[in-house]
Image (cartoon, rainbow, N blue to C red; front, side, top):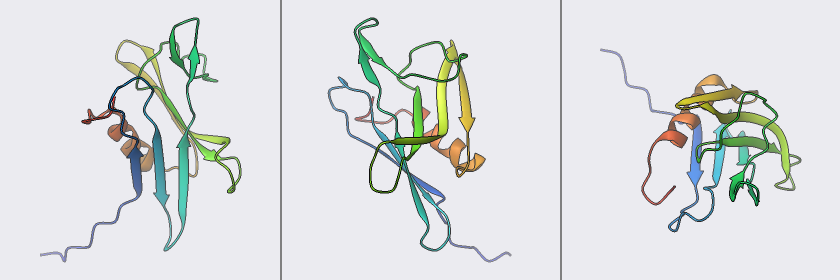
Length: 128
């Protein structure tokens, strides 16, 4: 038999509790690298649009056409001292019914991006 190795997490995904469902959920992901290397990713905040009477994100991808609660963009902070949007590292947007567009950029690995996506699409209690 092979010796069991301890499980190591490659990322942590946190969601704000949203009891009323009146605002979009908030995602913060923490990536683990080396021994003490951690990178935080922040969700780009959707803005309320009077035109559609709901929250919307501005995507730079022309293929993302439909609004969805599952649309999100994760970015690096612009610099380490603030939470302003920086480089986009994970983008998930709805193109058509049950079809989503996903883009993953470094420093996010494909497995980290896929794990964050799975957690975002999983139905959670107290999060909408």
